[in-house]
Length: 420
Image (cartoon, rainbow, N blue to C red; front, side, top):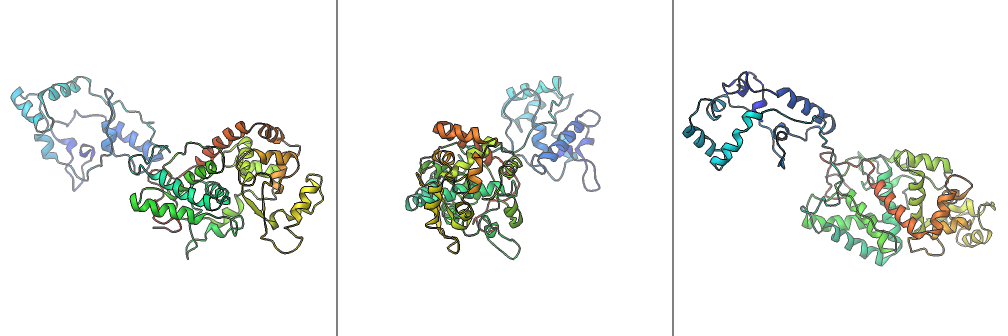
C-alpha cells in the first residue's frame, strides 16, 4: 500500500509518478473505509488489505502489512505504460505474475477500474468454536482431561468450575480478570466477599494451562479454559453439553470492588436478581435457568443460617430442622451443606422441585418461587428436565458471550494467576 502514502519531506510519493499523476483515483474511498474501521477495530486492518477487497468477487487472502516508505522511481519504471508494445508488456508482467494469460486477464481491469468497497465492512472479532482448530487442535481434549481428573477425585469440583466461569463472565464485563492473584498493583477479585473462602478450582485451571503451554505456548487464553472447563464439568455430573465459542483473551487488571457489587448475593430479593442479570444482557428466563447450577455444590452455614432459623412460611419445617443439625445459631460459619439434598452431585432439574417443596437452601434460591414473575418458569423446569437442560445450555452460551476481549484486546496469559 505504498501508493497511498502522501508526499512528505522524507517521502517522494508514488501518487505523483507519471503513471499515477492525474489518473489514479479513489484514495478518499480507502481513507473513508479506514476511518470507519479504526472506530471498531483500531490498528487491526491494513490499508493494503482494504485495497485488496473490491471489484469482481474472489477469496481475498488477508494479513498484509503497510509499508513505511514509497518509491516514486519504481512507480515510473515498473508499471506498464499505455504506449508499450506487447513484447515489453509481457516481460514486465512476467517479473510479477506467472503467465501471459494472467497478464491478459488483469488487463481487463483497465475497462472496469473502480473501487467498490463497503465502508461499513465488519471486522469485529467473533468467537468461534473452531478458533483453535489449527493453532492448538488438541486443546479441548487437554482441558477435558484436567477437568475429568479433578471431578473424579471430588464431584463437588464440577460445581466449583461452573461457578468460576459464572463469576469470570459477570464481573467487570468483558475483562475476564477473575483468576488474577493479588499483587502490589492488583487487588484480586479472589478476596472479594462473594469469592473469599468459597470460590474454588483455580488449581484445575492452572493445571490445564500448564499442559497447554507445553504444546501450544501463548495460544490458549485462561478465559477460554474456564469456559470449556465449565461445559466439561456439567457433562461429567449429568448436566447438558453445549458448543463452546472460543477466542477470548485475558485481561491485565481486576476489580475487587465490582466483584463485591456485580455478583448476585445469597440474600438478594427477586427484583434485584432480575435487574442484575438484565444489566448483563441476560433475560429473566436465562437467570432462572442458570440458577439451576445450584443443583450441585455446597453452601457455607453463614449463608443460609438466617433462613433455616427464621420459622418463615417459605421454608419446609422438616428441611429447616435437618439443616440446623450442621449449622448452629452461633459459630461454625464454614460448615457445609449441599444445595440439593436429594441429588447433590447431579446437575439436574431437582433444584426446581426443591423450590416447589420450599426446600431451597439459600434465600436467593427460594425467591424464584415466591409469587412473582419467575414462578411459572420454576414450575416448567420442575416438570421438564429436557427444557431445563436446553435452556441451561443456551444461557451458558449467552453468558459466555458477554462482551469478551477478542482480537488485539487483552493478552494471552502464560500463567492464569499473573500478568505476563
